[in-house]
Amino acid sequence: MKIYEITFSATGRTQKVTDIISSVFEGDKTRVDISNPNFKDKIYEISQDSFCIVSVPVYNGRVPTPAVDNLKNIKGNGATALLVAVYGNRAIDDCLLELKNILAEQGFKCKAAISAVAEHSMMPQFATNRPDDEDKKELIGFARKIKEKLDSNTLSETINVPGKMPYAKSPNLPIKIKVNKDCIKCGKCAKVCPVSAIPFDNPSCTDKSKCITCMRCISVCPKNARSLPPVLLSIVSTVAKSQFKERKGNSLFL
Ligand SMILES: Cc1cc2nc3c(=O)[nH]c(=O)nc-3n(C[C@H](O)[C@H](O)[C@H](O)COP(=O)(O)O)c2cc1C
Image 1 (cartoon, rainbow, N blue to C red):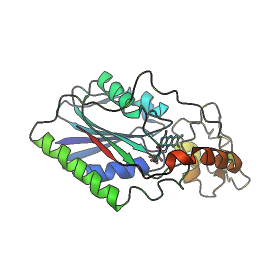
Image 2 (cartoon, helix red, strand yellow):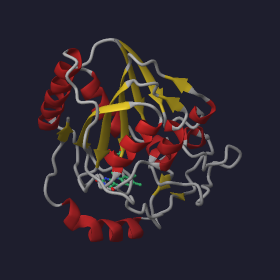
Image 3 (cartoon, helix red, strand yellow):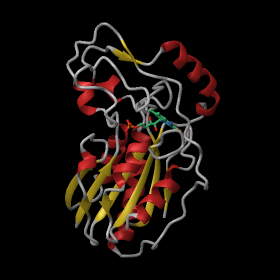
């Protein structure tokens, strides 16, 4: 079986969940990285007999904007899709519904979905070190159930996922990346920024109108020169704390 892993992962947490789920499926695997800033130049045609694991992180209850744009370059041609929304222990809100609607529009058959918790990339004090062993066991169990149904051709033609329309408004968070004097202008951040918000000729800047605060530039900087403004971040964390208190779960939708 031809398997596609179509993933947007700014800091690797969504990729980690995808790897756990994908480990259950055997076949000829192709990775399609829709967080790559050069992705927009490509058009992908998926063949009908393929199985696609399409994974995104939840950003403000929605699919990240560059993932929405890049998914529009992929033609599903009736291929089966397993949708995965990875969230930082707050909520997925309308993310899975939005993903399902985008993929249906692109010609995929959305036959299974998973929501999974991973460490919050902006506030790693929430869901720290998740997915943990308990999550891993559960996610593998979900993937095995999907595989059984896939192999026996008994997956439903469509699924119900949580969410409502109109989708939650995705606010443009007032948190913007700071760059300190340790920046050596190596350009690593500019190369990987999914929205090309960092100019190659002046990587110590960030175009605030493009930045989606995905945290990728902070995570790749070899000098730790990039960061979120600590006071603002601490206010946001304190305000949000009550929404993150209890351990949230992973869910399977079939
Ligand atoms: C801008 C932004 C918005 C986020 N919004 C949410 C959210 O609405 N709900 C939630 O539970 N987690 C939220 N998160 C946490 C991420 O969904 C989570 O950490 C995810 O695993 C990040 O995946 P990545 O490492 O593949 O980018 C947000 C993270 C960022 C950076």
